[in-house]
View 1 (cartoon, one colour):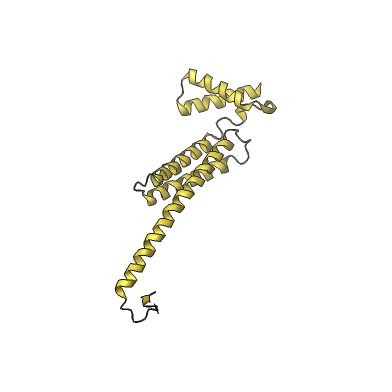
View 2: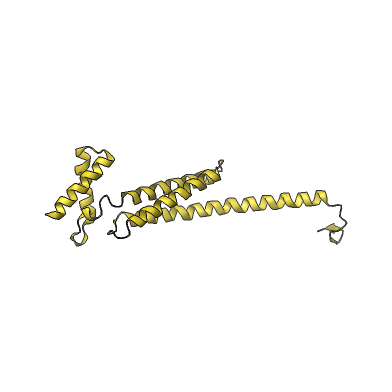
Length: 163
C-alpha cells in the first residue's frame, strides 16, 4: 500500500513539474509500469528521481550531434561556443549522476548513455578529420613562409634542390 501511495505522489510531483494533462499522466504511468517488468520492481522507485539525468544526457547528445553535423557539412563551426555548451552539459550530467548514486538505476539510462557514447565517437572522428586538415594547412603555410623568408644561405642543398 505504501508503495502505491509513493508511486502516486511521485507521479503527481513529476506531472506538476512537467505540466502534463491527466490523460498524459495516465499514459506516462502506464508506459513506466510496462518498462519496469522485471523482478516486480515498482517504477515509483526510480520514476522522477533520474529525469534530470535523462534530460542532461539528451541535451548533451543534442549539442554533440549539432557540432558533428556542422563539421560533416563543412559549415562554419563556433568551436568556443560548442566547447562551452559541452562543458556545461558535462557538468550538468555529472551533477545529475551524483544525485542518483544511492538510487536504483532507471532502465532508460543505459540505452541513453549508449546513444551518447555513439554520438561522442562520431564527433571524435569528425573533429579528428578537421584537426588533421588544419595541421596539414598550417604545415603548408609554415613551409611557404619559410621558403619566402629564406635566402638559401643556411638551407641544405641536395642535387640542386633546397630541402
